[in-house]
Image (tube, rainbow, N blue to C red; front, side, top):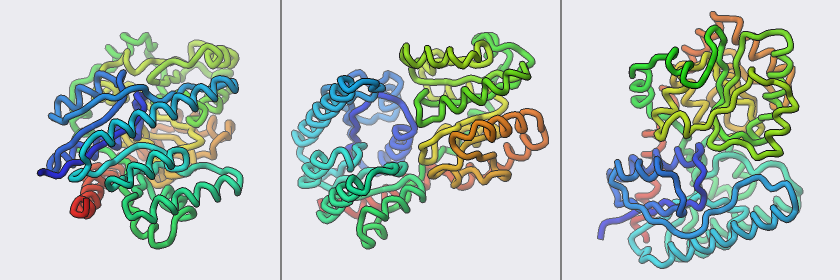
Length: 402
C-alpha cells in the first residue's frame, strides 16, 4: 500500500499557518498520497486549491471558535467549542487505518495535549510551531514542559519550527536530544509564483477606482486579521498622529472579516475617518493570486505586530518589491534587517512607528533601496520548496517505521 500523509486542522480562518501547510502539500503530493481533513464550512477557495492539485479531502464536524471573547461566558463557550471540535477531529482520524500514514496536524501542544497524546499512540504525529507561546507564570510553563516532554518521549511526536526564534523558544521545554531533532521548515514563498504575479498585467488606476481609493495619495497597506496581536491599536494611534498634519497618505487594512461592533466603535474613536480604510479579502477576489495582485496597489507595506513568527504576508510583500515596516519581535528580524531589507520598530512604540512611516513615505531613495534589497533577500532565502523538502525528508524517515 502506498504511504500517505494526512494534514488536519480544526479552524476555517485563512492565515499564514494554513498557507505554510499548503506549500508542504504542494511538494509532498509528488511522493505520497495526501488526505486533508478539515471542518465543514471551510472556504471555497481552499477547497478549489485541493481540487486543482487533485488532493483528496474530507470534512468533519464542528470547527473551533476563534472569535474574540470579551466576557467570561464567551470564554467558556469558546473553550467548550474547542474541546468538542478536537474530540470530533480525533474521532474522525482514528476511524481510519493509520498503519501506512503519518499525521501533520495543526493543534497547539500546550492546549491539546490529550488529543496529540492519543493520536501519537497510533502513528507518527507532526506539528509546526510558528512562534513562542508568550510569557506566562512559571507554574504554567512547568506544566507545558511536562506535557511536551511526555509527548516527545514516545518517539512518535515530532516538532517542526517555521523560524529559528521558535526553535530557540521550544528548547526551553524539551530535552537537548529533542532540540537536535527539531527541523526548521521555514514559512516561505514560491519565488516563481511571485515573479509571475509581478509580470502579470495590472492597472493600478483601475484598482484604485474599483475600491474608491483617491489618486495622488501614498498607500500604506496591511494584510491580515484585524486583531490585537497584529498591533491594530498602535497602528491606528500612529495613523491619527500622522493625519493631524498631513493628508497625502491613505492606510488600507485588508482582512478576512470585519471587526465586531465593539471593535468598530473603538476604531471610530480614533477619528481617522477617510484616512483609514478596511477592505474584505473576499471583496478583492476568491483566490490567493488576486490578493497578491492587490499588493501592487500599495507603495509601502506595514505590519506593526506584537506576536508573529515570520508572517507570510510580510514575506509576500517583500518578494513583490514593496518596502516594508514591521516590528522587532520573534521571527520577523530573520526577514527584515532594519535599514537593510526594511525598517523595524519596537512593538507598541507609536512615536517610532509614526517616524518610520513618514520617513518611508517621504524618502523615495530609501524606499527603492529597501524594496530592492528586501526583495532579493526573500527570494533567495525563503523558498517554500526548500522548506518543504526538509519536511518531506523527515516524513520519509518515520514512514518507514509506521
